[in-house]
Amino acid sequence: MKSETETTSGQASEQTKKLFIKTYGCQMNVYDSERMAGLLKPLGYTQTAEPEDADLVILNTCHIREKAAEKVYSDLGRIKKNKERKEQSGGEMKVAVAGCVAQAEGAEITARAPIVDMVFGPQTYHRLPEMIARASRENGDVLETDFAVEEKFDTLSTDREIEGYSAFVTIQEGCDKFCTFCVVPYTRGEEVSRPVDAITAEVRMLAANGLREVTLLGQNVNAWHSAPPAGTAGDGWGLGELVRHLARIDGIERIRFTTSHPRDMDHGLMAALGEEPKLMPYLHLPVQAGSDKILKAMNRGHTADHYVRQIEEIRKARPDIAISGDFIVGFPGEGDDDFEATMQIVEAVGYASAFSFKYSRRPGTPGASMAKQVAEPLKTERLARLQALLEQQKQDFNKAQVGKVLPVLLEKKGRNPGQLVGRSPYLQAVHADLPERLLGQIVDLRIVDTLSNSLSAQALDDRIST
Ligand code: 5AD
Ligand code: SF4
Image (cartoon, rainbow, N blue to C red; front, top):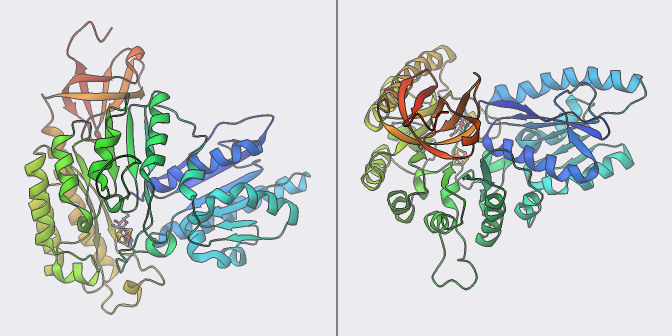
C-alpha cells in the first residue's frame, strides 16, 4: 500500500462544529478518514480545511516508517499553539490521534503530547461518536486501541458521502503475514474479511449514486474469502469470485483491488484478471526484494523465482497487465549481491509503477533487532539506483501507450480551462481538452504524448471535443 502521501480534506462551515482531519500514509487511512468524517456528521461536525479554529482535530497517523511517526509529533507541537490560542479566547479544541501510530504508541502519545485528548487505533473507529461524547463529559484522556471488535466494517460503511466517480470499498483488514520489517500486523490486527452481502450492498449504493469505478481495499486484499451470498451454491469464495459478482452490478464499469500479496495470489483471481472485462489490467503486487536470502529474512514466504513465475502466469492470462510493486532497500544483512538481485528482479518483471523505500527500523518488529543493519549512506545509494531504474521503466511503459486508443474514465476538471482528467485502465492519469458534459463517462481517447506523471490525449472525433 502506498505510504508517501499526506492529505488534508474538508470544507468550512459557519454554523456547525468544525472538524479538521489530517491524513498520513496509505489509502486505507484516506478511506478511514472519510469514514470518521461520516460518523461524526450526525454529531454536527463539518470538515474544515483550517486547523486553527477547529473544534476537533484528528491526526490519522501512519507508523510504517519512522519519519511518519516523528511528523505527527511535530504537527502536534503546532496544534498545541492553536489549541492554547483558542482556549485563551474562551473556546475549546479537542485533539485526537488516530491510526497506526495511535495503535502502536498509545499511552506514550499522551505522555509526550499532553494536549492530546483522545488516542484510538484503527480497530475502534466505529466507537468514535461514543468516545467524543465521553471526552467531552470527562475531560480526561480517552485511550481506545483494543483489537477484535465485531461489525466494524458495517458500522463504518453507513452514510457514505461520495464525490466523483471512483471510490474505495474496504473488503478486508489486517494482516497475519508478519513480514519482519512491518508494523501492520501489530497495528491493524489479524486478517478479517468483510462478508459478501455487506460489500455488495455498499457497491450497489455507490452505483446508485453514479459511481463508475470501485477499488476494493485491504492490507492483504487477495486474502479475502467469504461464504458465497445466501442462496448461492458452492464453497467459499475468493477475490476472483467476488470481483465477478460485483461486475454484474449495473453502473459499475471498472473494478480494481489493492494491495495483493504473492502468497495469496490464487488461480481464481488470475483467471478473473484474464476473463472479467470490468477488472482493470493493473496489479499492485509487492515483492520487496529480489534475493532469496533477504526474502527469507523478511519472512515473505516465497522466493524470487516463485514471484517471477507468478507474474508470467498472470501475463499469460492478461498480456497487457501493468504491474506495480513495493521495494525495500537496505534490509538488515543486504549485501551488494542481494541488492543486485533486487535490480535483476525489477529488470525481469518490468514495472509500470512502483514505490521504493529505505528500510526503516520499526520498534517491536523482528527486523529492528537483527544484526548487520545497513549503513544509511549505502541505503541512500541503493535507493537512488533502484529508483532510477523504476522511473525508467515507468516512462517506457507510459511511452508505449502513445498512439494507442485507451478508454479513459473522466473524473474531474483539469488544471487548465477546458481540460478534463481521467484514468486509463492502467491507472495512468490522462488529460485531454474535452467538454464538462463528459465527466463521469468512459471515453475512448487517442494518447498523443507523455509528461512525467501523466499522458495527454485527444478525442477520436471532433464532435466529441466540442
Ligand atoms: N521500512 C521501509 N519500508 C517499509 N514498508 C513497510 N514497512 C517498512 C519499513 N519498516 C514498505 C513496504 C510495504 C509498504 C507499504 O511500505 O514496501 O509494502
Ligand atoms: Fe506488512 Fe507484510 Fe502484512 Fe504487507 S504482508 S502488511 S508488508 S506484514
